[in-house]
Image 1: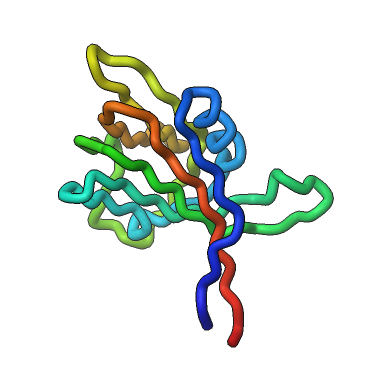
Image 2 (image 1 turned 60 degrees about the horizontal axis):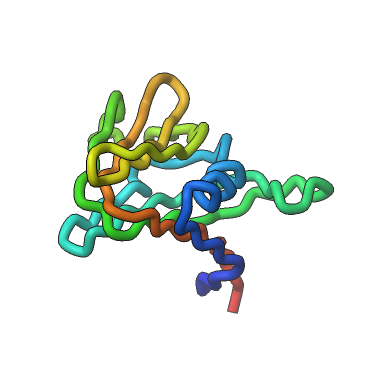
Length: 132
């Protein structure tokens, strides 16, 4: 079984990021599927989201959200040792803080991840598993 990447949405502005946030709201995220590659300045999040592109289809889509140029990452109320814990992503917001930006991933039950970056460079990419 191979994984094929299909739709890709790139966000470079606050307005673009709102589109990715809307598409990913109410998606499920397993704690083990959250990765911060500090040396590469990349933050990865695998989500299972409901299709909002086509309202007629009640389909769950597996997607990867990739944040580039991330300097630092902080989590609030998330136990990273509980790998099987499922989080519900509510929204993705960004705020200007001095010379940098803070991108906040807000989850249900007062949980959050804050990413510090200089620019908005976010990619939402769908994954589909195909039987060979």
